[in-house]
Image (cartoon, rainbow, N blue to C red; front, side, top):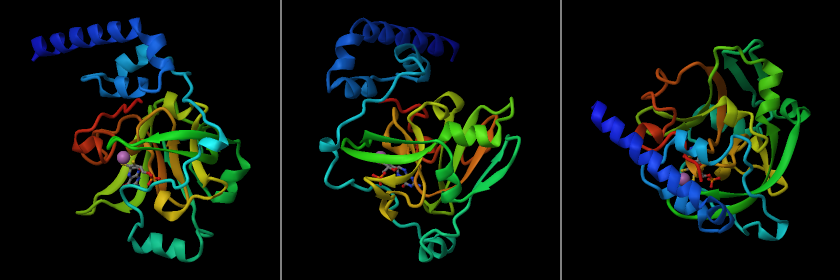
Length: 251
Ligand SMILES: Nc1nc2c(c(=O)[nH]1)N[C@H]1C(S)=C(S)[C@@H](COP(=O)(O)O)O[C@H]1N2
Ligand SMILES: [Mo]
C-alpha cells in the first residue's frame, strides 16, 4: 500500500512536471482543457500546482452563446415538494444556508438578488464529451458566505438538491472554501437573460466555472457548511463522486 502510494505520488509529480513545462502553450490552445482533464491520476494537488486558486475560467462573447443550452441528468425533479414550488413559480422557494455558519439563514430568490451578483458567459463541459456556452446571472457564493458568516472549522460547502437519483438518494455536490469564494462561483438564478429554466436547474443552480458539468448542482434545496463530507451520502463529496468520479473535476 505504502509502496503503491509512493509510486502514484512520483507518477503524479512527473505528470505535473511535464504539463507545467508545456503549460503556456496548452493553456492558450482550445484543446488544452481536454488534455489536462484527461490526464490519468491528475488530482486536486496537481491541479493546484498548475492553476493558482485565483485563475479565471475563460469568458466568451454574446455571439458565442449556444442556441440551445442542452440539459443533462435530471430535467424535472419528481418530488412533491419541488412540484408544489414549481406550481407557484418558486415564489415560496427558500434556500436554507446552515451547518457551520454563524447566522443560519433562509433566503428567497429576491433576497439572493440583493446580494452581490455577476453575469458571465462561460462554457459548460460535460464529462460525456459535449460543451455548451451560456450566459449566467447569479449571486456570488462568496457574498452568501459573508452574509451568513463561516465558522473557522468549516472546510466545504455542500449543495443538497431536490432531485432523487433513485433508491431515495438525492443529488448533492461539494466544493472547498477557496473554490466557493472564487469570483466566478455563482448561485445562478438566470440563464441567457431569463430565469433558469426547469431542465437547467430552476430556481437556483451552482456554477463552478473551472470544473466539469457534474459539479454544477441543479435544483439546490439547501446549502450546508461542513468540516468533512465523510458522513454525507457515501462520503466522497458528491453523487457522481460516490460512483467513482473525481471530486476535483478541473477542466
Ligand atoms: N441536481 C442535479 N444536478 C446536476 C445533475 C443532476 O442530474 N441533478 N447533472 C449534472 C450533470 S452530469 C451535468 S452535465 C449538468 C447538466 O446541466 P444542464 O442540464 O444545465 O446542462 O448538471 C449537473 N448537475
Ligand atoms: Mo455531465
